[in-house]
Length: 277
Image (cartoon, rainbow, N blue to C red):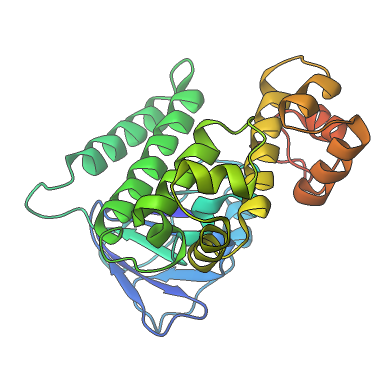
């Protein structure tokens, strides 16, 4: 879920976090993994369920809540990520990713993109929804990039720490840039000039899983993208992902994605719960 304050201010309280976060004009906040949270003018204000508010809006995209205080205007929505259970980015993001607007104009992209979204939502011209969807993508990418830029130099462990490590970072780059290559621990260790045992140990220490497990997730993610973007046969896609037989590919894909490659392709742009991606 993401929230942008277009006017005014509010307080965000996320279950499991000790302190509420104040959001001011043009601040952006992303609540990772669908964590339960509330928004209010004050932390102590009684809140109501968003589903109730949406039902009372009778299908309108925007709605107003009654009150006597200063007006606060917000843009709220959700971002669905394919293969979110296997996405390394999600695993390194904090529960709450907050990007402050910066009063000195340090983040012009945040203000300009928000204004563009508001304009599209208000005018509802031809293709407005698609434009808004792409702008939301931009906001998400920019927010993640901002977080990485602000935290990568201090990271000592985890995926960010692995990226900083000269040799393990190089191995990760190889796994992602040449996902279809059938990497082994030995071949990866050779590429980054490490012994096999030292490489395997260091990789697991930083990334949190063995190189082969990570490599499999990368290959399955590449196969999933190809299932959606091409008409290639399952056998061809499985072979490109490094599987010698179709049954082996189907079994591995279902273990990681939760459905067979055929079911995933038929799903198209719809999620199992019927919502659009």
